[in-house]
Image 1 (cartoon, rainbow, N blue to C red):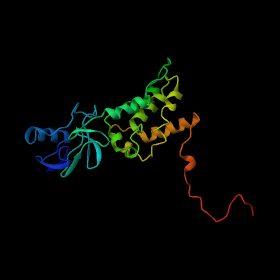
Image 2 (cartoon, one colour):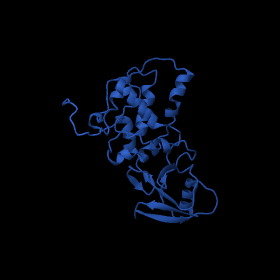
Image 3 (tube, one colour):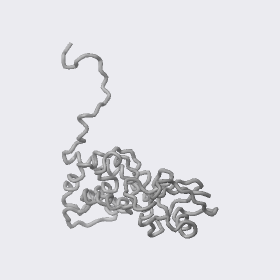
Image 4 (spheres, one colour):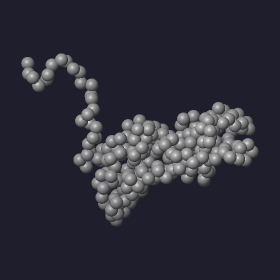
Length: 238
């Protein structure tokens, strides 16, 4: 069995041979580094799909290396939109800055008793492991590198619906520029999330909350809805 890994020094894919049998991608990478190529660089953490450290792209799709089962001919590459430090190891600092820009935390703490139902309401969003898979899969970054991004907006939704938040409007105000209206709602972020989080729906909910706070889609006025041109001025009368 062979897999191909994008090497940063040559910017080409290098083929490696693996023993036959089922294996996770992370185990395969460890095997290659230990027996074939000690220069191969990648990141590893919990090995249990909890920390998100080992996220990479396999055949053009974001995966956790510790969970993905290797297949013959797989093409392994680093995450998109991240500075590559070496091979599959990337710098995630810029992606994490989106959390700061979105101010995705409690703005004004208010004492409130949380019920089990309240906890369940934000449980899924709280499960985010910051693997950056959604960030890498998002096509908006190809045209807008300042986009807040899926996991930052999911975190913003998580806190905007928290009963202990005394100033929800502050969160909504801070996600308008390069935020909720820049998302194309393509759903790629939802498709690759290893924890089953649905950033697309979270962003849709944030848009509804934005409208309630008086905001509108800034591109709405310039959108064309395909109105047919019948060759007459509707304001001219008959």
